[in-house]
Image 1: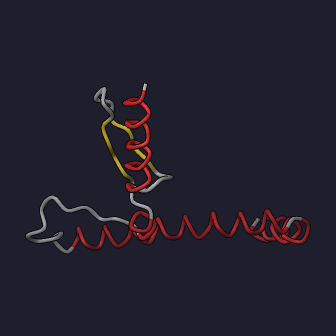
Image 2: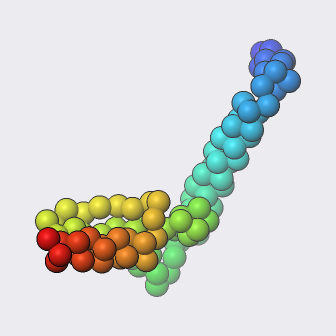
Length: 102
């Protein structure tokens, strides 16, 4: 069974390099999630984080691109993943200037 799976993988790898890149990326992401889960379980088995109540475990990806949450003027909570806080603030200032002129 494993040989068939490997044969399909190598055949597809030769035919489509884009698929190979996507497959490797997907595999790396799955292994990262698995290692984080294992680390968290080991920590819980050892008694958890003593004195660190209210803290959360974050991945490296979340540290590089933190999610920005903000409320608009109507009280709706938005979550921004593309733009930085500075970009959001400058856009808000531009919209305020436009509204003041009108």
